[in-house]
Amino acid sequence: MKKVVALLLLLALAFAHPFEGSGGVIQGQVDFEPNDTIPKAGVATVAWLEYVKISGVPINVEDCFCTLLFYQGQVSATAKPDATVRMAKNPRTGRMEGIVTFPKPGPYFLVMLGRPMPGKQIPPFIMNSIIVVEPK
Amino acid sequence: MKLTASFLALLALIGLGVYAVGALPAVPIPADNPQTPAKVELGRKLFYDTRLSSDNTVACASCHKPEFAFSDGGKAVSEGVRRQKGTRNAPTLTNVGFRQSLFWEGRTPRLELQAVGPITAHDEMDMTPEALRSRLEGIPEYRLAFARAFPREPISLQTVAKAISAFQRTLVSFDSPYDRYVAGDDKAMSPAALRGMELFLGEKGDCFHCHVGGQFTDDQPRNTALYTVYEDVGLARATGKDEDVGKFKTPTLRNVALTAPYMHDGSIKTLREAIQHYNNGGQPNLNSDPLIRPLGMTDAEVEDLVEFLKALTDEGFTKNPAFLPPKP
Image (cartoon, rainbow over all chains, first blue to last red; front, side, top):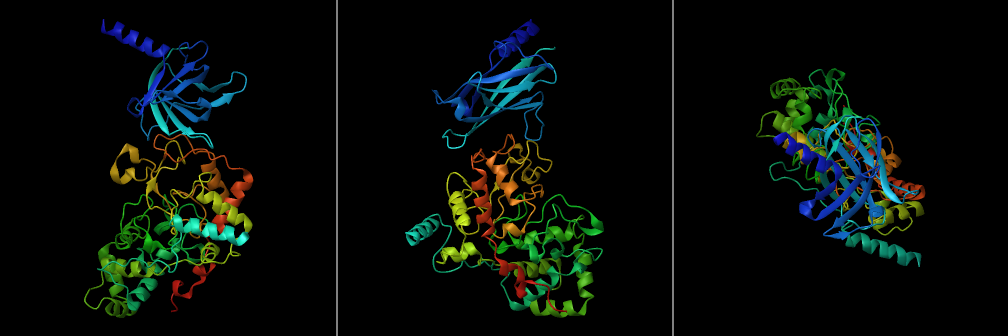
């Protein structure tokens, strides 16, 4: 039973990737293509930033110099992330995107680092989430 | 019009605390180690003497060379006894008497404590307090010099550190083109350097938040996102805290054009590359300082900023006979 609950929880996490940081003041969401399906290990996957809200107010995600860091183990400044993605605007889709290849299946801790783009006024932030990656 | 602009720039500098009108700041002198000419002269002699190291090959000046504003002249990291390589870049000693914290992670509050570190470190000068005392007591000129400088104290690691600290407090530098400009010489800096100063003090370059005031440092440990994972954990080496990983003290920028390479590990070779690192927003890092972000400066603006940093060079500082090795 416990295994089923854990599986359901992981599946739920796999399909939605809400982020939260600074005690809930910062919220956001990252989606994975195609159609926000579960990413597969070893496959290049597009991650895109759906929204970021600060105190409930959405910011223009293009104002964010956003980076995603993915950790399979503990999130620590001494640990090398298993994958890192700098988000940049894709002129074709108009979205802030990056391509990530997860090295192994299993759960990953996601950390999103946010800084303002030049001349923009958003506060620096850090948000966390968990995703699950399927075997290829 | 030009004069008005210069006057306004000067007012801005005063407002930011970058320049104090009237007098140069005085080096703080600790009550337990007052400056005396005998002590400063002894400190200078010790500073340049390789006999302070276990194999007689390394002096303080081996890594802090006057011609490079007392840094290590192009070396990323310095060599200690038995040619052992260190892990950190030798910082400039420009105005070191003003520093509120020493070593790259800023863990030491005063020079007298700092000096003990390199003298006793196994990969630097590798001396024990006993060996140091014994060696110096065996040199007649030092017996005399210590007796003059410390009439009521024996030769010891403590008095060696006090004397070297007294000498280092004389290493004062306030005669750069920038200093002459803020003193009223509006021709002292080139137009490019003036444009660079505007960037430095403005939100676009945003250098002044950390390289603050007339010393061009806040003496605070910060993570400048040089790496995603730091091999050298910086302040965390002292505190053990994950949040301190990769934090190193903001260095002064005085004489910075003479002190390449840059950063705690000397990994950046030129000023242009150092500025470009900040301009690009650094590497992804969990502990990155909140001020680290892409700056959006053009190549021309980066060049202007380089010119401003060059204008912080005090040429006289490297040639001051009082700072050079004593005559035998």
